[in-house]
Image (cartoon, one colour):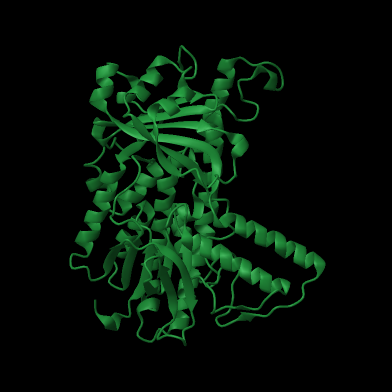
Length: 519
């Protein structure tokens, strides 16, 4: 890379779907140096299936990834009606299919390792000599520090890793997932600033990672301690509690049992089983299954859920691992009353199954730090319930809009100019991150909200639509009437995924950048 170009150093912590998509976009710009830091010792995806709705697939096409991804999954003709899911009540001896969701293009399903392999291959081709993109494994970020430009040649952000090493960048993207240390650092130091406003301590903008979410500090500003009034102090204390609450992910009250099975094994046990060619959502009281074929029909992705909503937004006891293997016998007890065709799916699994405690991130006031050179992406910003199959899609949208802004010609000209000192560079990055937050945060948090609603509907816990006769409101309705309303709400909350595109959001973000606006 020609050093005269003054490349902008972008660090991406996390090599999941969102982090890799952003790396692919940025790898096409000769003015950006990308370092991807992954905590794991190797780039290996955890999980089984990725579902992609038309809104996300259009992004794949715009990025030129559709042809290669098309070799890993069956891609239906664009726009033609396709069965996305069949909905079936499964927690009764004789199951009942009560609706079929047909959408333009349906749901495209990928085996997660196949998806990652395509992205890594594209990265390698975009930068065959590893001049602009460097991938580092075994690098778990612990925290970061915002550096004063006068303390180093050009300031930036200092990254601190668990192995004792450090690195620097101009722009840090926290794509480090559910247990994000970038998010934890943001929240921790936001609370420090609030304490300064309460009069407990002085807060030096350059001494800590600056993260007062949603506010802007001038470079070099120091917030002096002052005595807050009792009402001000109470309000600030409440704000600090809210920010602290967002630092750590919370348990949704739900366990998920995830696995893949060989299609031929299911065919052997139940010839012509309905999930071999059609995705299915099985509904049950406090229990649920989502099952669909992947890997061009050679595998079946299986996810079963057990809900305990009274535990929602709690934190698991430290002795309970977030992910661990449990015996098949342990979790099948929750499905003993289910219909046989659903229970046979469990029988096709191995003797142990991966159990995940499903966690989410409470809504953040901002995805970016106050100085604007640190931001959150994907699960680090908006980890959500999986019931709209949109977690990966929302991470991709994050990366797409951020990557579009960072590679915009005016941004490139500003960041790569030989006369661009650290201060103008910081201001440019700040504008980009604030536009990203203004555009992406409302949409991502909306999807998180409707994904939670979908979970309530799938487990027959949605208010007014439970199947306990004593809970019926406005007169007794038949179970079939309730099921039809359940479906109606599921579809209504999901239509954004195939009836809208991200084009309008991208155009708005670009328009804001070109006009000099950031809100």
